[in-house]
Amino acid sequence: MLEHMPPAASAAAIKALRAKLDAQEESLANFQQVLGDIESVFGRLQRCLAAFHTGLDALNWEKKRLPIYKAEKKPASRRLSRHHQPAPHLSAHPAPRRLPS
Image 1 (cartoon, rainbow, N blue to C red):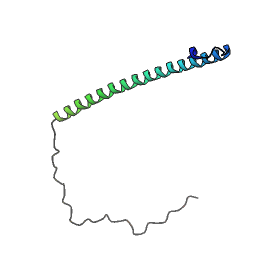
Image 2 (image 1 turned 90 degrees about the vertical axis):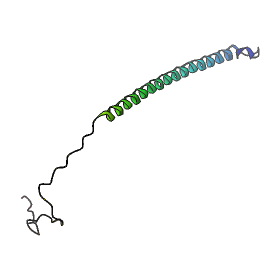
Image 3 (image 1 turned 45 degrees about the horizontal axis):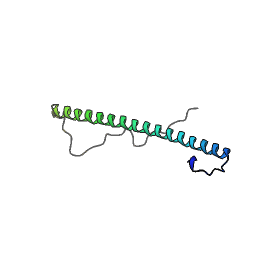
Image 4 (image 1 turned 120 degrees about the vertical axis):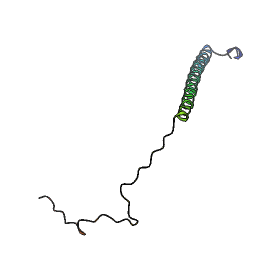
């Protein structure tokens, strides 16, 4: 980039362009590092998900191997009437509450 500059360019302009180019190169290096970190995180996530699915498959396989027990029906101690009758109330109108003094 600096080779294409006209010969009349001042040394200050060349220094400014060199600093700008160095900053862009540093920014690019940082960006590449961040991309590498993201790839690493996604690689770990992929391995964790694969392990999770393997464990889930093993759990389902074990679940299928377990015997299934059905609960025995217990006879009712007394037969319920056909029509439900609510429990009798102590009184139709409750006594008014007194406020503490």
